[in-house]
Image (cartoon, rainbow, N blue to C red):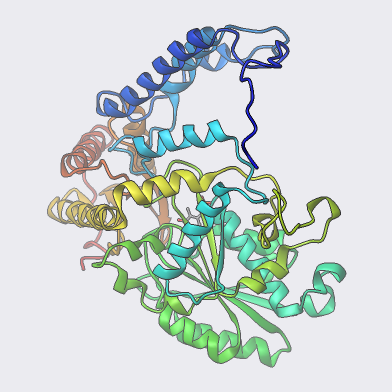
Length: 498
Ligand SMILES: *Cc1c(COP(=O)(O)O)cnc(C)c1O
C-alpha cells in the first residue's frame, strides 16, 4: 500500500525555508557539529563560568530582524556572544545547585530529534513508542504494577504540580474538574517536610489550594521528615474537619540530599488512604545504583514519583518525568474529549491513550529520544556507577573539609551534596562563593542552614574528579584568606562531625 513511487525533485518550492544550497548548508552544519563536539571535549580548558561583559549583552540587543542574515553570520554571533557565556554546567568544576552535565551522546540525540520535528502530543508514530518504552522501564525499576503510566515534562517542578492535580482529582472525583475545588476542595490538606523543595508549595498555590493548605512538617537532625509529627498533624487536621489528601516525601532534599523514610511514610499513607507522592528530582535515579538503591526502600509504595533525567541521569536539558501507579487516575486528571483530537481505529489518529491525555501540554517535543539514547548507549549500570561515584566524591570533599581547620562542615553528607564554610561570617562566605564563580575556577552555590550561610557543592556532573574537588577546596581557602586577611574565627566546634 505504501509502494507509491515519487520523484524527489518534483514540486520543490522556492518559497520554502529550506537551504537554497544544500552543500553549503551541509558544510557549515558539519562545522557547527565539530565545534559543539570540541566544546565538550575541551571543556576543561575554559573557565567554568564568566561574567557577561556589558558589550556582549548589548551586542545581541537589536531591533526585530525583518531582513535575512546569513546563517554563517548568525553562527558567528552565537559563537562569540552566546556560547562562551553559558551556565557552565558541562564543566567538571560546576557544583552549584543540582545541575546535570549532559553528554555528547545526548547532544547528538537532541539533534536527531530536532530533525524529525515530531510532535508527541499524540497520534500513531514510533517516537511515542520510544516514550512508552521508557515509561515501561521506569515502571519496572520502581516496582510499579502494570497499568502504571508516565510522561516526560519540562522538569520536576511541573511533575510535582501534575502530581498534586492527579491527587486532587483522585480525592474529589473527576467532577471537580468541571465544578472546581468547591467547599470539599477547601478542606483538602497536603503535607511535606520543611526541607521539601519550594516548588511543592508553589504547586499548591497554582493548583488553587493556596500554600496554607500545605502543612510543613519538622525534620530530624538528618533533615528527614519526622514521621511521628506527620502522623500527629494528620490526626489534628482530621479532628478539625480537614481532609488530608496528599503527602509528598523527598528522595534527596535540595539542600543536603536527605532521603525521607519512604517506607514509613508510604505505610502511613496507605493506612490513612492518602496519596503518596515522592519528589525524587535527583535522588530517585539512585535506583540505578545497586549500592544506593536500598536508600530508596519503600519507593515502590508511591502513588506517583517525579524525577529529572537532566540531573543525575546526565540527559541534556530538559527531561523531567512523572510516573503514576494507577494510569487510569492519571488519565482522569487530564484527558479531555475534543473532536479535533478524536481517536480512530486506524491511520495516523490511532492509539488510545495519547500523551496529551496525561498532562497539560498538547504539542510536545521528543524529550524521550535523548533519554533513550542515554539509557541505551551507557546502560543503567554505568549511569548508576556515575551516580555512586559522585557520592564518593562528596565524601572525599567531606574528609577534606573535616581535615582543614579553616573549614567547617555544616550538614551531614547523605548523598552528593556537601554544605560547608570558611570559618568566618555569612558575608565573607557569600563573597567567597561569588569570588570563586567569577574566577572561573569552580561554581559552587550557596544556601542557608539553621540561619547560617553555607557554601554548597552538589556533585552531579559525570566528569567531576578528585582533582576538581581539590581545586574547589584550594579556591575556598585562597579567597577565604584574601577576604579575611588570614584571620579565622573559631566560634565553636563543627556542628556536624558525623
Ligand atoms: C531540582 C529539584 C526540583 C525542581 O526540578 P526542576 O527540574 O528544576 O523543575 C524539585 N525538587 C528537588 C528535590 C530538586 O532537586
